[in-house]
Image (cartoon, rainbow, N blue to C red; front, side):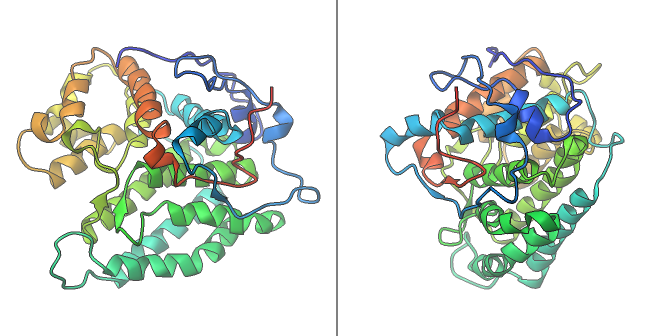
Length: 353
């Protein structure tokens, strides 16, 4: 976990996050440590409503050889640019710090509160199987029916035609209704959902902290509630050898928050006392707290990868290593990416030179 990636961060003075993503260096598709390539500013500005045609996203990666097409795609470059931009934005900042909360962020929080309320209105049913409570399918059917309207309510009026495309990612972000499971691919779909809102200009540069500290944090809480209420299975779990059964991104962004912390070092997050004291300030520790609540036995046994990470000397190295691990274990794995859907906002077309 001690190897890093090179990424030069530009000044945060652009009007939209989409413009910053365009400036962020992007990864060369040939390797995880290559220099990231940029597309032009024009490519990532909110699309012109007169000339731009939105489309319902569809799957494009059907065989293992298609993975090269994914790693060379504009979608991969934009997605990693988004993740790394936010990673830099939350560096050394607490969840409880002050930041602007825009009207769009408030609308996103209201949408997530609606999903949360639907869980309360759809209690688990009695069934022989302990895992995968079928009441989840009732909950999901409600989202499937309402997703487009929920997204339309978030978008500015001149972008309502983007709702059918963006709503697909919202529906993909909450788990699979057939298998009643949830994993890092679903988590990635929510990040794509947020990235699309940035690309159409609904979310802006000044929303950067609120995207993670408000919106993604609330999403995480709703997903935890879904997982506990309906006993969802981990999708593609690697057991004790995986980082976490369900999430990955909050560990990346959470480790960035902790970089250069004056007292908390990676070795401390395995101490329950430290987790209980600081989890409200740091997303990484919030995730550790959830693991402690859900699993029993020695931490080193049920979360071996995280236990190993606690031996890394600095949060900066943890953060760099987790980014590399995320690419290798999630974004470059066919079982995860075969479900990814591509549209006009996240395109399968190759990155433009």
